Image 1 (cartoon, rainbow, N blue to C red):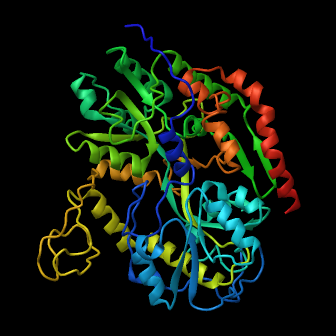
Image 2 (image 1 turned 120 degrees about the vertical axis):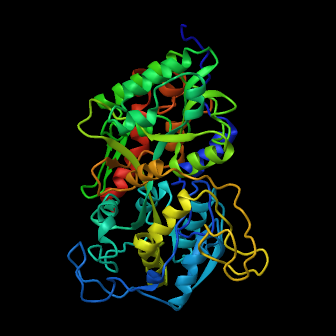
Image 3 (image 1 turned 90 degrees about the vertical axis):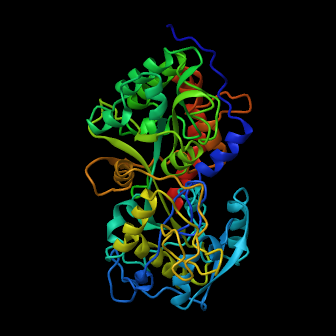
Length: 512
């Protein structure tokens, strides 16, 4: 059957625009284990959460200076955020309180986050800690919103050495303002193996990946077979990330911030990006792309779409929970066979200390507790047990009110009452769990991880990349993929516009 479908415009719906804002701001949760936000990421705690790490005087920092005691003004950490750490990160806060500190919550909204932060910094009333968003680097750093932490943290210490390579990727003029404490899996493709089997398609993307045959071409082949079942069948639904993770698979970033050498590199004219965008445009022009956004809970079931592009934790968890009777799986973004390695997009999460903060010591203590929790073997084992458990239960007992950290127990160990079932939990197979761990292991040999800085500048530039202008024109990352537009035309028309957005940041980088 010849593939022929009407491709919709590039502009995203209002719902998608709202979700993209969150997705492009790192799409992660707080460091604790008591709540799950959009990404569905969870983490546990352990007794080592209060252990001291290398922040005392006498150590040598990675920049060659002495590590000094961070300034403090008492035991209260002022936290600016759009969620309260005291409730959303309770287990980490409990460890923080055991170390002699408490958290004061300064509320804002995600949409007003940067404006509110800038106002507080300018008025000399800075909070002590804020969360990382994609626009924190380089936008926030370039605009002097944060404090360099090089004098206060020994990045070669046992606490931080395991993530030092990711910390270094956010180097800005030889200094480090953002200290991520964990690596998150990036964007993957979720799909229904049940649907493939029901339609008689024998190729399983997961098996292709495990065999080392998961490439752009094998991905395209399976989508062609799927789409040839009917004109209402689609191969892929892009989301707000659009072409970015596929571009990264070539080993090239759309925008590369080389903070150490004070360079911002616009790779729009790079041959790899041209090749990738042409490949994605071809998918759209053959009718394989569903440009209408749908939530992961329904995108694979209410439309005949084979793959959907989402961040792993939130996307897969939501899709599987929404269709518990189906075998929902995920695979990494396919490998570019012309690249010299299997390049994979990645993401991180952590905190920053705003400029003018009075209690830097408390902020660093909170970051240390998060990091020690992240690398604790008991916590790692607990996280695996929870991810692969058939059922999970809420910590607080509905009868006696006692909270139990082990969410896999069906009955309360205090009063033996049945615990409240978490109906949103999706059990992950051991097979998928191992892949999810590989997608976070920057020291492993499965992938070479890259983080594209294209969403780290102004909101207007991010909108241009993701959505285009008010009429949907100039959608640099979405036009080819979602609408089959010529990337060559987009590149030639908007290269100068992107450069105009980047030049002020280049100037700030040199000045700073």
